[in-house]
Amino acid sequence: MNQDQLKIPHATAKRLPLYYRFLKNLSSSGKQRVSSAELSEAVKVDSATIRRDFSYFGALGKKGYGYNVNYLLSFFRKTLNQDETTTVALIGVGNLGTAFLHYNFTKNNNTKIEVAFDVDPSKIGTEIESVPIFHIEDIEKELQKRGITVAILTVPVGSAQTIAEQLERAGVKGILNFTPARLTVASDIRVHHIDLAVELQSLVYFMKNYS
Amino acid sequence: MNQDQLKIPHATAKRLPLYYRFLKNLSSSGKQRVSSAELSEAVKVDSATIRRDFSYFGALGKKGYGYNVNYLLSFFRKTLNQDETTTVALIGVGNLGTAFLHYNFTKNNNTKIEVAFDVDPSKIGTEIESVPIFHIEDIEKELQKRGITVAILTVPVGSAQTIAEQLERAGVKGILNFTPARLTVASDIRVHHIDLAVELQSLVYFMKNYS
Image (cartoon, rainbow over all chains, first blue to last red; front, side, top):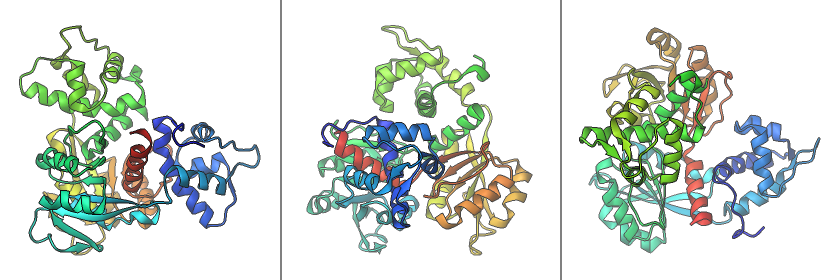
């Protein structure tokens, strides 16, 4: 399938990493095929949605047989660029940033935090999980040297916009923003925003209105 | 508007807390009206989506005038139950859990972490940001005593399912799950799952395919 022509819906695209991880576990355990019902139970997505999602990839399950695990897996690996590791920078080594450094991303995903930045003199020059911590003023130098274009932003909200502009100058094209700030950056930079307060409030709203 | 009849699309519902927070800031700064273009710029949602979202609430912006900030705000406050504070339990006081305790949820949202749990003897009996930390075996007792039905789960993946079952017995109806585990719980319990690895991989995927 031609990557350039593959324009699947956003909601489907967001579920790909989830499917991929589960299929990888299935394959490791020697399983050859999987039904949409089994997948549904494991990834907590209803099976009609799974069947529709998979139809976009040209994967059509057979009745009474299900999907071929290895076919799906090789498709997802290609689609998700699992054959190459994406290196990532972490900006802000507070509690949340430290949690990221201890999180073993590479176990199930080919993404790897390669370098971290902070302003705290007691952290600069040290390492956490073998990831070196530099001063924030070295962002441009270190990112360009390493060819890193993805950053996780876990700084205090007051510094978020300034640092986003620094990341822009450093050539970053994707930011995973964990601060409550809504960032203003060039339109060719993709920002995914995860706001812990919004997530919590959203859960409470859904509990009250959809249960 | 009758809450029972208000069944807005999930995607719209997820944006409500975001709109709410921005409108609250606008109102505090004395602003009386706002256009969908201004809102769009601030919350980073395209203005067509905002107009469609708002139409579900019966809020119709006037051309050249925009939306009435206070009308919207009072509507959102009611819809999001901002008049009552929702108390929340935090399970797992590692780096991620500690980040949550330091996060000032109540500033913009009427949700409040009231109690935390861990197994580390050096943490049990202490407080972080005035939130007391108990042993995980006290979950049922403490949650029932306090009438808490919402929990944030930031424990190691290996304990996630066991603790989810404990939360179920304690009467919890909503779990914000930050572990990579897909939880199996009773169908009347709402689980929102935020997987840091999936979020990172999703960002990389979108950068490569939608930029």
